[in-house]
Every structure is written in C-alpha cells, then in structure tokens.
Amino acid sequence: MTISMKRPGQCANTAEPRSNPHADEKMNKVQTTTSPVPDPAHRDLMSCEVDMAKLRSMSMKQLHDFRNVLHTIGEVTAAFSCQSRFSNERSNTYNAAGNAVEDLCQFLGMYEQALVNVAREATPSPSSEVEWRAWTILSYEADCADELIPFAVHASEAVRDEAEAKNMERYAAIGGAK
Image 1 (cartoon, one colour):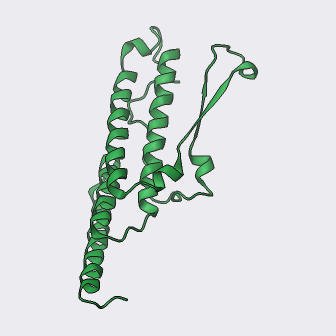
Image 2 (image 1 turned 180 degrees about the horizontal axis):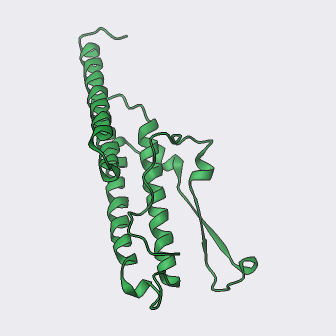
Image 3 (image 1 turned 180 degrees about the vertical axis):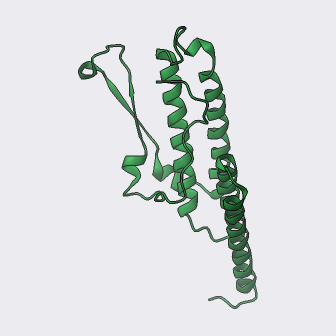
C-alpha cells in the first residue's frame, strides 16, 4: 500500500445510496487480521462492525457530538500514519504497523460516514433536532467540500428544513395541527 495524503475514509458522493438497515451489511464491515501468519488461509479474521441500530437510537445532538469525536480521532490517526516510523525505509509504502494504522483510519472514516448517513435518513420533528441534524451533515460536507456551490445548496436545504420545522411548531402551538 502506498502512502497517500488523504483524510481518513472517503467522503461520500451525493449520488451514493443512503444508509438503511437492508444495505448496512455491505457498509459496516472491516476485516482486519489478528495473526502475523502471512498465509491468508491461516489468518484469524476479526470483524469490526458499525452498530447501525445504536446510531439510529441517538438524538441528532448526540450524533453531532459523536461525529465530532470520530472526526477528531480520524484526523489524529491520519497524522500518525504520515510519520516515518509507519513507512518502509526504502520505499514510499506503509510497513506492517502503518498498514494497521491505515486500516484504522479507513474504519473511522467508514464509521463517520455511517453516522452521517443515519443523520441524512432521519426525519426529526422538533426544530432543535432538525438544526442538530443540519449541523452534523453540514460539518461533514464542509470537511469534504471541493467547491462552494454544492455546499451552499446543502446549507440552503438545511435552512429550509429548519424553517419548515419552526413553522410547523408555531402552527401546532396556535392549535392548527391535530
């Protein structure tokens, strides 16, 4: 594996499908080896999974806070992977420890992406939850953005969603919604 200067995980393309319980299987497994035996037939595999049900049970603020933790850990882990102690001396590739650090970076990026997918598919009702959902998605999109216009579209949609939620709350407060 060659060393590349990239953030942990890849930011999702907006055309990619959103998270759902039926598609979670392919999205949330990372296979890592737990044995130094080089023969793949004799390696012990450990499966690391993202608990999608646990993510779905979190409030939008909790998802936002947890995303901040995952993002920070991912950035720190990615910084470690750039250190010379994790690369081979004669080539521009990771050594065994570097490969493990890169696997961890990929898992953290995948976990963060799963969390954002859960936020995207959610339909929170109080305006405060709608706002936390927006902050979660927008902070992720800002980290992944290459251009301002697509990000501005996401921000505009978030403002629209929050305004609609606040209007529904006002309408319900005056007795209009049953």
